[in-house]
Every structure is written in C-alpha cells, then in structure tokens.
Length: 264
Figure 1 (cartoon, rainbow, N blue to C red):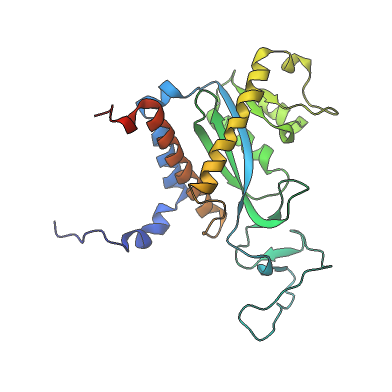
Figure 2 (tube, rainbow, N blue to C red):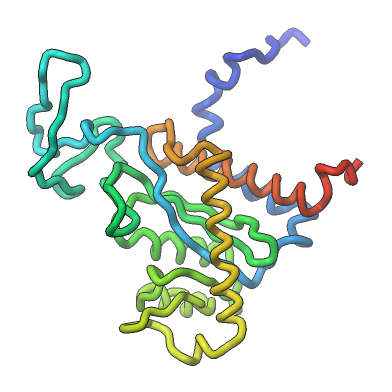
C-alpha cells in the first residue's frame, strides 16, 4: 500500500528490463500455452519468410572501419555526398548502430541500414509460432529458419517458403530435421523435384504461405516497426517478440470471440 503508484515515467524506468529478449520470448511462449492456441493453430504445417527492419541509423553514420575522418563543415549535421564512393559491410560500419548492415531485399530496392526479422507461421489461421532476428548477410534466412524449425516443428511437418529458400543447404537441413520443404521451385537448379511438387499438399503450402506477409504488414504499420527506434539486435529481437505477441492475441481474440464478449 505504501509503494509508489505507476505514472508516465514507469515504463521509461523499466524499459531495459522489458526489452529483454529472454523475458519477451517467455511472454511470446506463454501465449502459445493458452487453451485457445491448440484449437486454432496447426502443429504440422508452417511457412517461413524474412523481412528487413530499418535500423535507427542514417547513411551518414555508415563510415569506414579503418577510422577515416568524418566529414566536417562546421555544423552538427554536415552534408554528405557518397556519389562514386564504394561502400560495403566489409569496409564500412554504422557509428550509430554497429550491428546494422547495409542491405536490400531485392535488386530493384535501394540499400539501407537494416536488420532482418524472420517469422514462422502456422497454416490454419496465420498465427506466428516463432520469431528470430539476425543480421543481413546472405545466409541469415536459411540459418534462422532451420533454427526455428528445430525449435518448433515436429518430425513429419511441412514448411512452405519462397524461391529464396530453394537451395540445397535449406532443403537438406529441413529434411535432416524430418520436415518436408515445400519451397517455390526455381526453373533451373532447383533443390526439389517431382517427388515433392507432385503432392497436393505442396500446392496448398504454396497458396497459404503468402499469408505470412499479413503479419509483416501489421508489424510495420500498426505495430510501428517499419523502422525500429532501438539500437542493436537484442533489443529489436525483444521488440519483435512483443509485437508478434500482440498480433497473435488480436488474431486469437477475433477467432475465439473475445472481442464480442463471449468470454465473459
């Protein structure tokens, strides 16, 4: 009774404890232990994908690792012209967020400093069953997905994915976990063949896997995570877990009728 009441500063004082990825993952897992979860979530069929989350860092902060002198023009925010300058993650690093990497999702996109978010979605109602946060390095999507499959998928499960996952390392890794990879196959050099694509379940996985974009869309618009305001992957990982926890609660609420008061 004598403790101080919560006020507007309570969150700020406890933010570091809240944005702890272990605490956030525990909260995420507790939602999966709700009675409603087993009713609305599949434990056999999944899809995976990754997206870029813009880092809280500007291109001006991306300077040479060898200690090259920062640009100065007598102001606090000097002009910068990178035209003709070759910059890469091997030679440059952000002074604001050293863990952010210069990245682009496809050849037509502009490069920006970002982190990668990875999710695993179940197929019955589009609930997010696992989340990972990594750096952008060309290998992260496969490595993070195999880690999520090992942690979440039971033997005999299927996993849908786009063409970025149609590579021997992922297909072989999934099969070693006894998970059937339903990846969109490339026209040339595909790691899967007719033994996988001829089954009706393959076409179903390819149709449903596109729903994973709904989670990313919600996270970046409603969840406000198109660009993080936190520094470092550990805090962003916690932010992603908390964001998708809310997404799952909203989905469960809609599916079970919580919002209509049927739970009272």
